[in-house]
Image (tube, rainbow, N blue to C red; front, top):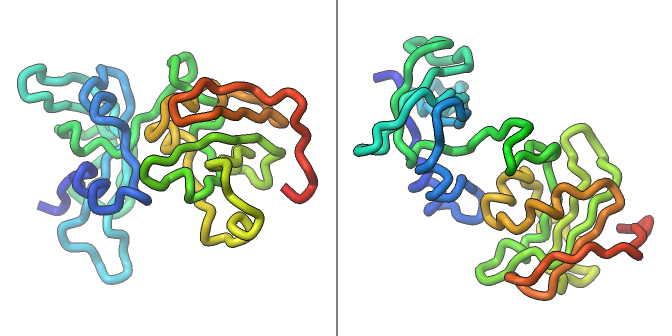
Length: 211
């Protein structure tokens, strides 16, 4: 076979700090009409070619016993020759690398597919985002959001190795409580006292030029 589907659960376990996937519940409860991204891994990739093609599939049904999904490929493969736009694909929850939310969905965010700057301290075991603000985006794919654990000092933040670029939806997969803050406009800022604390908007906050 020319390709196999990547087991993203295994990949996420191997690379927990860099490879984020939707929660187990979300991957198990997708419905017909929803869009999910699968990774079609080439079994014999060329030396200069890609390892896999990442493509979107629209779910048409799910077997309630096996939990296996059936869907229709909505991308035209660039490398794979045995797949084409509109082909039927069968897959399992362990293959769902990302879900696509459409406007009108309660979890949809206008900036969901854009990037945010995240302090690596937020990603440490037991840590979380406690302070976040949104500045004017610096480029098209920038959401403007900047997220921090809250105890970073200037020296830590001045080291680019301590900051990561992440998709907003990927951050949401790790912490669903960020949904409401992420709806904030440019100039918004939010804080909370603990990982399970309530988010509060900081209304008297003003972005400094060096932030």
